[in-house]
Amino acid sequence: MNRCLVALALLLPAVALADVDQRFARLRDAAEPLGGLSAFLNRYIGECGEMFASADCRTKADAFRKAYRGKKMYMIITEDVATMVSPGPYQPSTGDYVIHILPFFAGGSYALTHGTPKKTDATGNPLLPLLSVSGTTPQGWNGGMFARLFSSKGVRVQVVFTPLDIWSLPKPKGGKIFGVSARVEAVLLTEGRTGQELGLWIDGKDANKRK
Image (cartoon, rainbow, N blue to C red; front, side):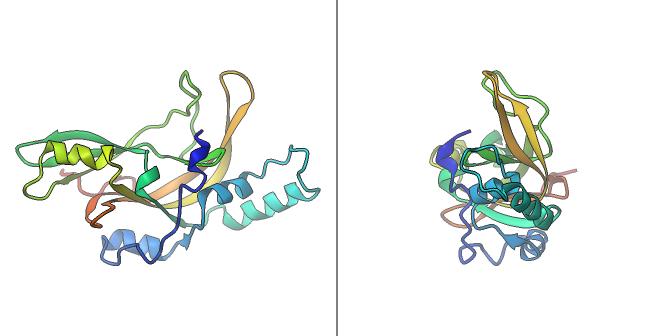
C-alpha cells in the first residue's frame, strides 16, 4: 500500500457543503468526523508485535475497537489523493456518465475496505468489487472535459462508513497485509473546485441510476 497516503482523509468540516443531497447530509450529520484515516486504522488494528510496542498495547487496541466498532464515521478524501475513483462510460449525445469507485481507502500501512477482501491480485493488492455512480454533465461539457476531472485530480470523495472487523491477507512474497472491513453507508462525489455533485452511492446502490 502506498505510504504516501498517510494523510489521505483530512477532515475539513468547514469546506463540506451544506447543500448536498439531504440523504447524504443526514448520514453525515449523524456520524463522527474522522480526524485522519491512518491514525484511526493504526489504533483500530493495533499491531503489537513491534519491539517498541507498549506493554498495554493489546489492551488499548481492544478498548479502541470496542468503542468504534459499529459506530458511523465520516471522512473527506481530498482531490489530490482520491485515486479510488475512475471514469466509466460517457455518452456524448446525452452527457450521461458513469464513475467507478474502488472501495479501498488507504491510510498509511493499512486500508479501510467495503466488506472483506478474500484474495489479492498478482501484485498483492486486495480484490474488491467496484461501486458505481451515474449522472449527467452540465450543458456545454464534452467527453474530454469529463476525462480531465480524473486526469487532473478534480474529484473529491466524502464517505460515511461503519467500521467492523480486521482482515488480513498473505503477501505474495511472505508476511501479511492488514486492513479494516467496514460497511460503507454512502459515498458522495463532488467536483473539488466547484462543489458540484457528481454522483451518490447510498443504501447499497447508485442513487441516480435510472430504472
